Amino acid sequence: MAAPQTKKRKFLSLEQKAQIIAEAATGRKNGSIGEEYGISPSSLSTILKSEASISKALASGMSAQRKKTTQPAHEDFDKVVYYLVLRDKGAKKIPISGTMIQQKALNYACLLGVGDDFKASTGWLNRFKERHDIVGEVLSGESASADSNSASSWIATNTANILEKCPRLMCTMWTRPAILQNDASKEACQSNMLRIAVCR
Image: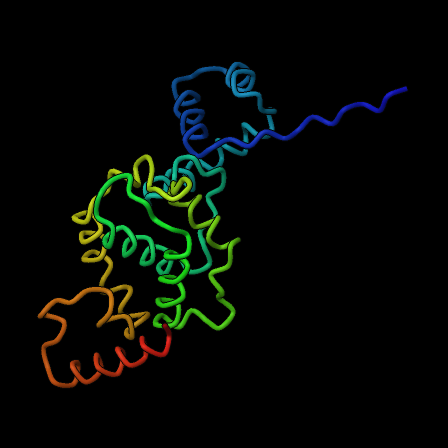
């Protein structure tokens, strides 16, 4: 007698989960929703209870195609790497090599003091690309439509928070006259530039 087949668990994207939550809010029956998406009542219940975390993840810019809301271990660092890569490229659908992403990640990990355990491994690169909708070696979807202005806007909004945690990044993320207001900060910048040379 053949052994019964185990039903494979279905993983939905954040976009699909958001759609489920929206449909449930209209009063549609859970059974009908579960049948359409091929999920069990318990899975549906978990999704509905996770409405806040799903909404927060999507609002933060996390890829709608991701299946989990787990943030990277160093969230600010992850965003810095992504936006600096985007700023350097600037245009839509352009080649963006995995090696280049890994090199930039290693450089900024050194500046941010992320830790010696960060290696920018192939596994990290794959997760990074998944988080930001980087398919193959091009930016795709919403990530591709973002331009250097949106990158600058994010940096401006988060400057104080990032620099409070990571002052060594001050002189390398962007060069604005307001940052170098006195000799002390200029000396700090020179010191940081030497640090970059070591990191590279």
